[in-house]
Length: 311
Image (cartoon, rainbow, N blue to C red; front, side, top):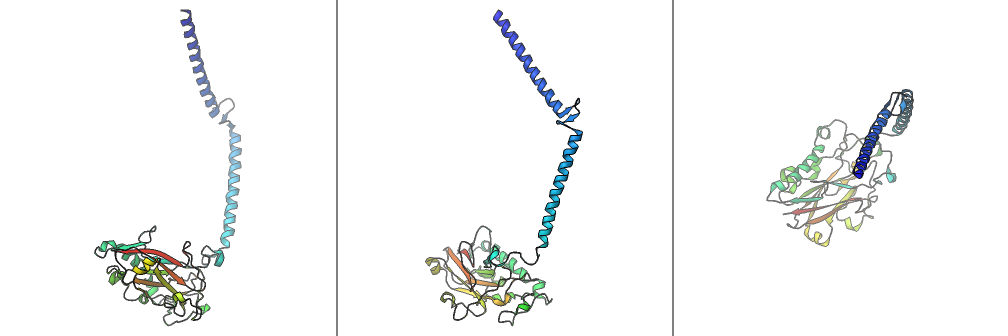
């Protein structure tokens, strides 16, 4: 009996102590939020809060002002029409790459089509046509004085003429790779559009008849950046069939250099695969050739890789 009374008394004391502890903790927290005796909020008086807020206001204002001043100085060193880093100092290292159309998916280089299903290649046709639309607008076609008509120019232009770009006439892309014929996709003879990526102030150093490599001699022409496509592997070379180029000589030197001229458009070349073996995946590498172009597969320097499959 005595043991039971003692146990009850202990439980009562413990329970009261717990309630007292919780009450005191809550009271301490409430006093921390606002102490009426010390007139503090979160442990600081109004004066202290004012001083610390003023300090951070001045500190961050000075920091923002310093940042703005440095940005202003930096922007004063930039030319909005000319890149700051050029030549070997730039990311492109003064070595152009190749771009292509169609590109159905950013993450894929496969061009697949089924001649019996127009829906399988309609998006490829739209992709090519959408890109060529930039060459067919009013600025490109009309004689506005923005572009130079270089149709009769057969050599490198004079440096004093570099401030204006040559008009690229898409009629030079031939009649076999046109919208009316579905860019060859309807017939299982796909046309792939190639362009040299823009590198500011890059001028191709051309081969001469004495220096042109034997591997491109059949396609080489004076005053042109030669383009040549081939199957990557022996099986691809056997299955790829004849390859035609429009224009046949590659990219003319008169379209260079790119200096951010108004209305500038990169020169184009259509590559037509005239009779590829159907039902076989064919891997292709296209390269451009000049004395100041090097090729690197991993960096995609001076070349491009893609695959196509005709069902």
